[in-house]
Length: 224
Image (tube, rainbow, N blue to C red; front, side):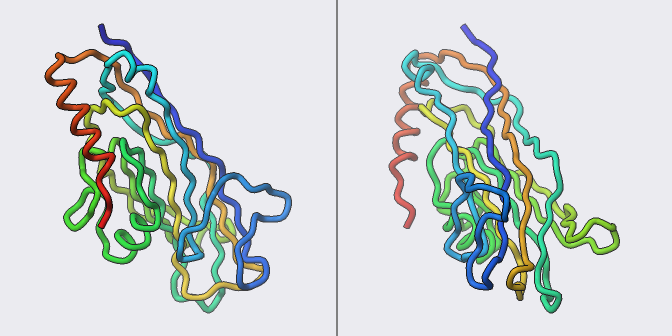
């Protein structure tokens, strides 16, 4: 018997200031919100999880039917006036296996221009329940200081059913700037809600066992 579900993952805002010219810290008046820095030092990620273990114990499979993101607010980033670039790479991911945000954003997307599950990636397409890449660039014609406007948006998810006992939910942000300004540069990214609508359903024993086997194999893959 199937049952409809709407799952949600919440991510806090990212508010960082380039305070001393060497390190990023939460902006004055804000608190640490669980974001961690990428290896680049100019990127961040936030991870949370959606627990499906109760359904897994009932031998049920989750079938996604619609996915999306809600992120009301403005994207803003201030580089040094001498910087030849000013923009943001933003990646929203929900996967059935854990990922390494540094590998995904720094090595693959920014370094080699391919996303998770694409040709050249070590990730498997079917594990990407939701994937959205966006690029924001500075729009100096709008009278909102340091406003970053959406320039490109691309989905790359599989929407495949999963028998995993949890979903891994990520927001990854990387700035692009050739120069930053001490005590002046900052980044503001709004809070977001990732949504997945779908239904839980039972499958035949053989199909479900094969799906469990595949989930186990994917979960235990080691990125080379």
